[in-house]
Image (cartoon, rainbow, N blue to C red; front, side, top):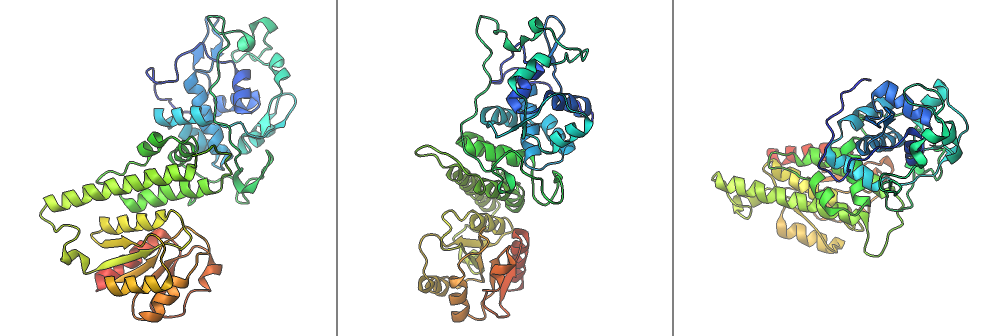
Length: 418
């Protein structure tokens, strides 16, 4: 793959420097130098800087793109797609990648790799680390001949007498994809996933996860902006939900007051709130009724979350997606016993009731209670796992839906029919 790299940002925090030799970057990423040469040759992710002696060196932007490449490949993205995402990464994503790159467990290899080894390292990126003493055997990037000991600028101090400082990532204990606890984690049975596969692994999702793990509210806010012309359903299914699920799989060694899930949830809820405020403003300015007008409350949808779901993000996303289609929805928050849930349904008299959750096996007592009290009321339950579906009440008005998009369409169809 040959790609033209975007112009480097000269005004960012990744300040210009003499650059790093391939051995230093290999140690930084935890890969073999041969892997870096493969990425340069196949995908154009090579060093763009040069020293006075015409030795090629990796600039901070080069390293940031390699960090994006490594992270995506480790998460299962095919190398060609990961390289494309790294080349096209913007300044914000590169900044997050530089600031949050963790040090991962690794196994050591000896000597140079052949083509088969390079392909293996690409697929299991992040699991190979080069011992420090291999730097002495490093080859020159221009001639592929061994560098003399005095030309390996890796160990030389930076101008001014100080050693160039590599970016530091926040120390955290993280679970590798697939539940692996070490560097030799196998790939998924289907091989590397495409960046366009049903399980989204885009650079933006990864940047959002990294921003939450870095406890950067500003970065999360910027990545989660939902403009007035945006689609909350697409925003949820392609960005927030995959990031939320990935984050839930990570084991994090956090400090007091630090919770990555709370950072992501707070930014997501803020984005939805701003979206709805702008949406309502535009509607009223166009002559439409306000949100509390009786004409808009006649076909209201009541959205419940699972009882033990602390942050019901999917319920809020569904309510916003319904609002974008001109339908009113309200989310039930706080403690809601079965008795209280039935009371709410009696008071609101909704067109439909929805249980929206990201849990695989939620408590369905509320669904049973509402169905027993109002057997004619349409009830939609979002359930991914087939095992949990067996616990649903049997009846023509209770429908299990596997996907968020399907849930939205089913509810809209009921509203339109009434």
